[in-house]
Image (cartoon, rainbow, N blue to C red):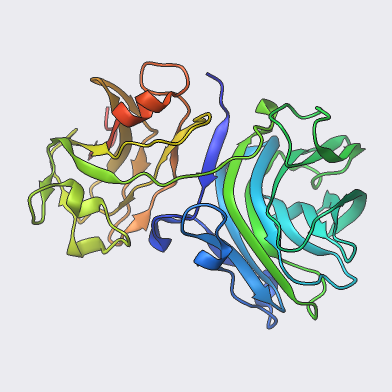
Length: 361
């Protein structure tokens, strides 16, 4: 299955497992915080957002620059936007350069700007208006090109491909969507990086996906957290307690208070997850590990899925030393040995990790 998903985020779990970084342009004195809070949630317990005046944004790296990228996210605003354009979604390239921005204007319409970093131009304004207090699912596709770029914006739309007409509110082509020499986008930012600082805003974001733009839109999505509930097969040594999963199934990571450890090459821990009952298409499963090593030897870690003894392994991630770090997420578009996902496969799968001296295998 060619799923193309690079990253999903529902802001559940805990703040230490998030890969978002707070960014404020030029250390602006007008900065205000962007935060994770239940008040910003559409589904689950948490979303992120910002209120008040000033600049505030959180950025997530995509790790590999994508020549075209599709982003979907739930969005809500709750305050008058005044007369200016307030940007809230930003496609960025290597070097923290902003190329494409989606804004909300004083008429509650979406405004698309794109161009070289620092020289963006307005490309289109939607006739579609966003009501205050209502959640919308917005999808944006952008092709990175210095003169022949394209951008499509879809709101509350059906699944489709870039170029479909389902719920498009903006579609432009033959425009500049990056600086000269840029090869793709490797970061999205949510929040206000520029614009009218004296105008109140109350923005909320939740249920995000980032996908290879060539694979297209998927429509309104929700991102759920699945808890661990038991050991399946473990080989690491736990610090304490009766089960290894209890050392890592945490509301908030406590690092060296509870943990599993190993010095055995290829040792694996696999855990059971709780059964789910939701309906709809399962596009992918994402695992995020928070780890460290205690010696300078080069070690790597892989996350894994186990379905009836058939296993899928992520790319290897080098272990940080000496402090804990959250590793980049690993996205599995297929159940082990299968194409795509069914609910039964999700309920039957085990999740875990293995580690060893580089290379692991």
